[in-house]
Length: 399
Image (cartoon, rainbow, N blue to C red; front, side, top):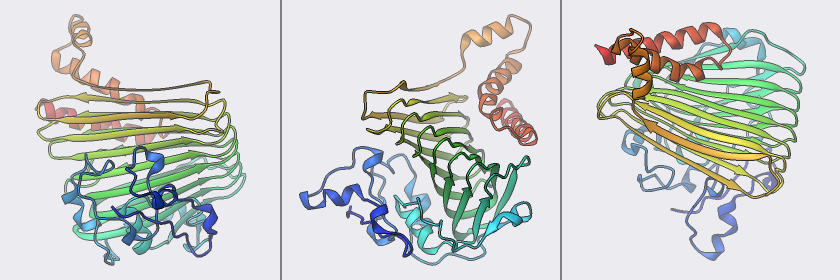
């Protein structure tokens, strides 16, 4: 692999983007060992096409992403946005905030930076408190369409809002989502993947959180043939908080993946990562890779990450890899955990001993397992929709 160099946007100072790989280039090739060491670049040519042997691609069906790895202009009509709910908050697409924090770390995100239009910049005004969620429908025009897109979500100081990116239809779609949470703001971002079964979606979400600000970030994946949504969150300001939650339900032939990165950079930050998944059907596959870095200045940090997977049928596979780096000894606490298994026989026995049928007992166990994430959304109507979707999935496995 070549060593990418960081080329910032024209309006940015190069000093704001330091490439760790470039610092060791003169010493020869150094294998990338951790998430924090991955190279970044805005230039697609700086990234070799993935082969599936790289650390960040080895669990991904790379061949199925071929349409999103070619350095060619995409179809302008590949996806459409429903903007009625957020029209009043849209800012010009070439606003200065684009690229303030986002730095592509793989080929699809670099291509999305190069070819994707910057037409969606949602800016929540300072001090504004929005009680209703801003829902942005994103609909694909068909799997024969290739699309690249860029979205910027910016919460100005001391604002509060919830933004939902609701994906449906089908397409081959590479997407960059840049999230900036200014000091004192409270933002929730929900990325909902309800694609058709043949859709291919590769997304990079990168967020920075200012002093005494909070970001809750959700990745909810139910649909799509290959869905790879990788969130990266930097707790930059003192007292900032970040909560990364995920829910997936993989059916036969589906590949649902998230590589999560939480970087505690400022002092007295708090982070929590919890992803849960259920899998059913032959070749159903989920991938979760969680990386937490507690930097040398992140004193007083409190952090935890966990991934739990429930395998419902034979032939399904869940890959789960938690990683934790700590560069200071002055923290409140840090930990990580991962568990993948089948039904808890004791839970099933307990329910069946009280007159509940085995099928109903299994249904209750799965609903209880997944509803933990659903209930954190804080949007009753969406919670009802997702619980209904889980019921539908369970009906299929019991059919």
